[in-house]
Length: 111
Image (cartoon, rainbow, N blue to C red; front, top):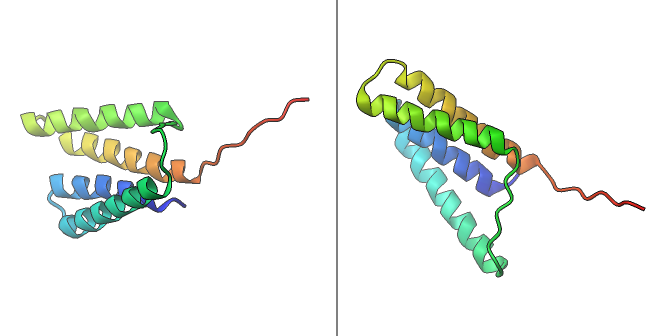
């Protein structure tokens, strides 16, 4: 499991807790933000080179981001269903970060 992915998932869940006014939001948000920052600094110091981005399961990520943004819009406009959209979008986005940490790249050798 990638510790950075746990930190990013924690940030997303902390934001979800903060928006929904659930207890424990500050602790989750601050701890996971600090963990993410520390891990990104270690990654940048340890691996200098070009920045690349390889996204696993882009449909799941795109769908969760769209759902979360729609939920934020509903929350700001005080429309019904905002909490459910936020919950669904942010939990799915956090699940994407957690499952992408398990994914390993495999190469196929053809002869």
